[in-house]
Image (cartoon, rainbow, N blue to C red):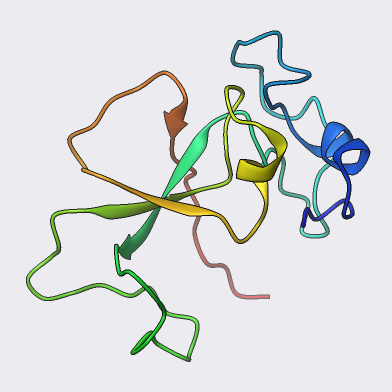
Length: 117
């Protein structure tokens, strides 16, 4: 359910959510990182991902690339849960759709880049 394990105690070690956040945003890096050294992959803020929204995974890319429609769909995917979410919404499999124009204090994004080893 979470990169730290399968129960709510495991989530408590890895992310900020409704039961431990004090209903507010926290600085990144205060909880355990995942196996790749990334912090706050569960909770704190929902994160935008590149994928366009689809009701299911039929027709999804199988090579790990983002599922981007041409032209772009009206909705994008968010993942990870937030400081306001209950534990079940912070599970790795949970995703929701939002308009790219939406702005909220529990919604963010993560910058990343590929590097050569």
